[in-house]
Length: 167
Length: 103
Image 1 (tube, rainbow over the protein chains, first blue to last red):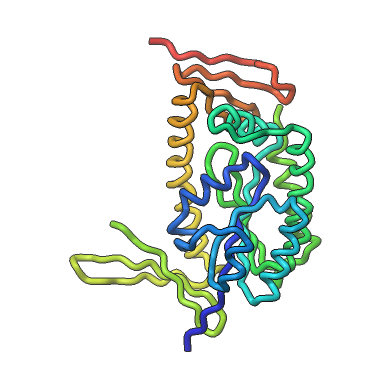
Image 2: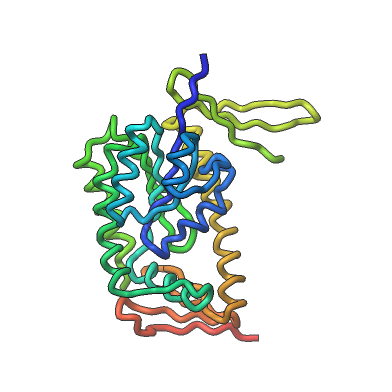
């Protein structure tokens, strides 16, 4: 018997961490060719979809909770990029693509995004860590049923510290 | 050979396969569940292949717009320019080393 549970794939990370590039590069692999939609659009449809988030906005948490309640299987791909590097990428993107960049809101979002990932962990089904300092590197996968929040938080801190370290 | 990742959900559990065509015959290779070593190895292989695709694309896009490509190398932030020159920056964004390409 084959059961189909709707899937929600979340590509998360701070601005400038390469979320949209990741979504394009792995459209047919990690994303399983699912359409990329906003939460509102995706949840109302009730079918599998992918979405791109910073996990810094309070509505992200509310929406993930809703998706969890609606029976979605939640997979998170979290992209790690150091503070300075992601800030520079966001600045260059402002020049290249005209996307507005505000340094103070960037700094705030940078810290909040990691906290967002911790508070989302237990509502998700699996969380993948991907480092993007130059190329995408698959680091680890955490399943909340097998790995405690404490262990997960420690691992998150270690990766965050390592990507933030610039000589 | 193009191999497509497919997924089956059986009794709530996910199983992954690689489907491909060999001499006109459709074949499939079983990778196991999301936590299996084979599946993880496959994902790891993908990151190594597409990572370079991502950076090449970013390189072209940034150079066309007249801005450097920025990434981390040996613990330094690197600004790579269109002419092949690289500036290594520290955590205060001060240039500590410049490497220029010679003709």
